[in-house]
Each structure stands twice: as structure tokens, then as C-alpha cells.
Length: 510
Image (spheres, rainbow, N blue to C red):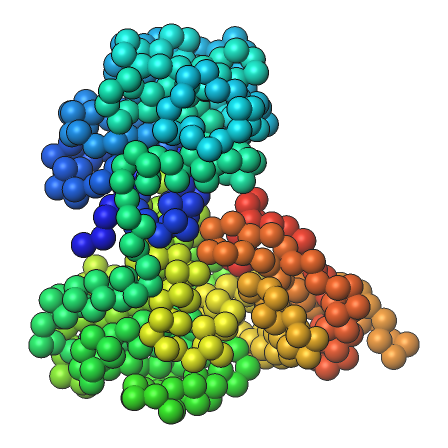
């Protein structure tokens, strides 16, 4: 097993970012809720524990707490913001509601030497986000950092590996944030940083073989990065007992079915193609609400697999390329998470599902899956492929799904992607696509008045899909794509470009 850093989430908007920063240092970490008991945490055997920030005040009646026995587990603990204040309260320090509140950029300086702040500047810019603050450090703790306002910014126990930061080391606005985390993980907790793609593959293969035994595994193969890399991993683990099924749901991009089959033609993985497009489109007829569309697609997806499973001799497992962002956005990681949107492979599975779900990538981010794919020898044209949502074009045709709308979205998307490829921009952006809006506008084409559809171009730059910035694509390229779409896609007379980042928006429109 890999060494584990356990992140206890108290509801911070930055908790997932803590995980990303830790993973970047090749340390495996998991996010868990504060409702876990000390015994449950001890069972996981973490090498270190990080307490996240949170929106609550430690004085609030229903604010999340930590099992007091956790402090006695003998594990190095780093409290961040709210986590620091919990540490302070438990060990007899004093937390006060702030008369001076610190939000945004701040400056901290060294007060007392400690390994946590080694190799950081004497005066360092950090990112604060707190109202309450530590007024008095607990007995046996040193104040190691103070802010320019004179507030305590970090404390550390004189003998035990217990410490806390009032600011957020995980955000890019903290100049030396990665150094603070590196010091905690490697200088204090003693991690080796051995969590590499090769290490993950070896562990995953062992787990898959132990879990599956002699049974068969059905895989929902979409041809995208996640399911394709998963196909290679599963085939490495169980060989021909993997049954990859490519279900055409009628919501694919232009010529996608042929492209997927061609991608795997030269591998040892044998794919079965099943056309269920009529069933999907029939169930979606008249449905406009995004969450309902996702739930329907998830249900029909599983029903289709159940039919295939019966024909294949009742496979015991259904494998899916579920990723950590899917789980997080579906509100499935911690107790107080909000559901942003259901993912068909997280929130859309019916309770009557007879097959057990196998999700080897459930704790991985997209960039980590790509790294695993390269280590497995997956062809680069698959690894570099832009992400595509499980519900397909259903979440890019806003409102009701119809064959005519799908035609418009397929043609416009194909033109946009080809334009990016022609100008060598496809590999420069993380994800690009078009969206058909439920809006019609007035236009003039060939001296005639038109009242037709609007297509939105969407392109973002990201690492893992958790956050994203809109791509600064050259205006001439966008103009070329818009002109081709209006001239070649019947029913479109206007093209716009989405310049919203995530957050506040999501990458997909539904």
C-alpha cells in the first residue's frame, strides 16, 4: 500500500486543491469527512493528517468537530485555517472572533524557527481567509509566524509533530505554499514520495485481480481518455475476461463510433459494438431538465449493460471510468458537500443494479489518468483526446434533445475542432466544444431575414477539471470557426464565445 496523507474536510472551498498539491508531490492522499472516528482513521493508517479550512466558526453550535482521540494517534497533524483553530481550542489556547479580519493577500514573517517554515522567506506573501483568529497559542506551542497585522499566523508544538497555519498554503496566491506543504510531508512526516503512475498501476492490478477473482468484467467503453486507459489497465489485469462494450447512445460526436473502433483495432482488446441510440433518444424525448436528462442516461446506460451482461453469461462486474472530480461534484466525498451536478456513472445508477461496480480511477484526477495511460503504453492520440462527458451531446444541446438539434451540434462541433487542429491549437487547450443554445436570433443571410439558432464556442485550459480558465484563442481563429459554422451548418445564424472560467461556471453548460 502507498503511504497515505489523510485530509479531513471541514467544508473549505480549497480542500480539493490541497489534494491536488499533495498529489503533485507524488504523495497519495484521500479526503474524508470529520465524522470519522479516531478508530476509523487509525484503521486507514495515515502517515499524516491535514485538517482543512472551513466556512464555519469554531464557536457555532453546529460547527463540525474532530474526534478528540485523533490528537492522540501520534500522527503528524497540520491544521489549516479552521483546522488551526480546532487545534488551538483542543490544546488550551484561545480563539477569538476577529475585530481585525483578514481576507485575501497578506504578509507573514518568521517569529520562531521550525521545520515547517524552513527555506521560506523571512517575509512571505500568503492568502488569508478568516474572521476568527488565534489570540493566544496553547501551552507548549511556539508562535512561528505572525502576520503584518500582528495576528498569529502559525503555531507548532515544541515536541510533538502538531502544527497549524492560519493561511492557505494550497492556493497559488501564497508565494511559497508548496514549500510549507513539502516541509510538512517530507521533513516532518517523512513521506518518501513514491506514489507514481507505475506504483499506482501495480497496486491497481493487484486490487483488481483480488476483487474480480475468476469473474468477467463488463466495461462501458466510450473511446474517451478515462474509459480507454481503463480498458488497457483491466486487460493488463485480467486479459480476455474483460468484455469492453461500446454502446452507441446516439449522443456521440461526428463519426465517433468509427473513430473509437479504429483506435482499438490494432490492440489486443476486442470491443463489442452495440447500437442503443433508439432507446436513449426515445427515453429523452420531451425532457428538458438537465438533472433528469443525466439520470435517464445513467438508467438506460445500465439497462443496456444488463442486457449485454445476460447475453455474455452474467458478468459479475461493471467497470466505469469514474474520476475524483465526478465524485466530488456529485457530493459523494464528504458529508457536507453540495451536489453541483450528477454524473451518470456516480449518481445515475439504479439501486437494482445486479452487477458490482468496479471503479479503479475513482480517486484519480484527469491528468493522473493520462500519466497512467502513458505508463501503460496507451497510444498518444487517445491520451491527448479532449474530455467528453458521459451524457455526451445531451448536456450540450440545452433543453429537449431532438435529431435535428443533434445534427446541428455535431456539425458545428466538428468544424470547431477541425479549425483548432488546422491551426495546431487542439493540443494547446484542455477541452473545446460547441453548445446549442435554446435561443433564436434575427440575422441576415443572402439579403433575407433569418430567425435561427445560436451556437456557443467553449474552450478551457485546466489540469484536472476542478478549476478552469477560458482559453485565449486568437480572434482570427475564432472568426474562421464562426464563419464556417454559419455558412455550413443549416439552422445557425450566430456564434458566440464563452469567456467564463470555472468557478463560477462549470465547464459544461448543463
